[in-house]
Image 1 (cartoon, rainbow, N blue to C red):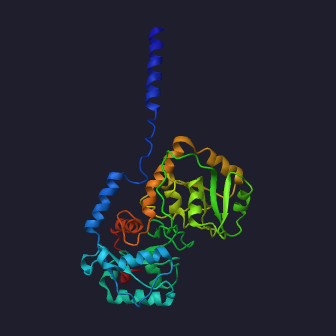
Image 2: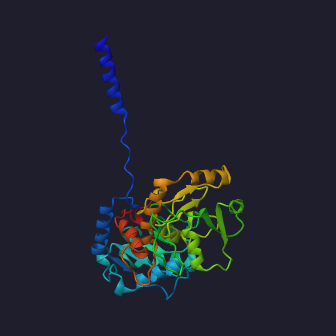
Image 3: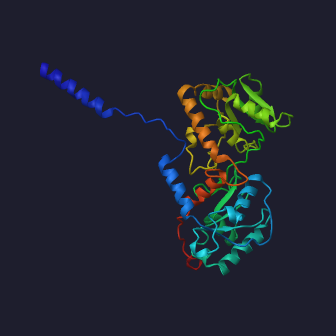
Length: 360
């Protein structure tokens, strides 16, 4: 009997040992790849990445702040280490065209590239990229379809539904409009005053439901509150709520991260166009919820359950990530401009498509 008892204990011990799962270590950085890999690859970009820019068809300017700054930095050869005048040494090719260019003229532009540029023909544009605020939609025109399916599109966040191809296209980090710089918060600051804060924009039923709850602060965008006051409100809120895809204002996403307010992205469909999706581990710095279901009660329950070490970790990682949302008048290391360039760098290994003449 003693032998049988010992055998049972041994079997139980082996079972517990084999089924025990080592807990995953808590993330210490907001990056998808280990920090050492990210920083090493970032430096390789500076040493090796080269972009050739085609001559614009006409002189033009972009109207949105982030597009305008990105395009200005690309044009500024003296401060753009990635620019090359030799197309043979380029990794990628930039196609500049006005934001209001008609589909017919875009088609003509692609046709001219195919006729005159050997670099377009070797990949059907897969090593090219362009800038378009709302993105280009799919069309029956073969030139536009070629551009849409193959070239990397850089658009504003959030992208127009149907005009964004995940894993290929990129969105620009939104430009923070605050004129009152502040130091980022840290985990030792006092407890936030509000559970959640958001800007009121339009007549969202979801926001209307939140307005009656004292734990949430809703500020009308038409109010005369200064940007400094808005910064104070963000800093005093535990979570910052962003309505995605419903006309909500997402321009202050980077500001929320910088001031230690954990973003809550509200949408009933998957969000596949977040800025820096190739770089940041968004699941560790933001919360994703839908508008359907249990309504405000479910939202409060979800947010109320995020506290202690988990909340402090999300907040700290968000503050670290915020440096990549800053648009500087003169590009600085790891800022928004360089992180968009880094995402392009990650796309430099392109698939060589068959030539058009080989298509059936």
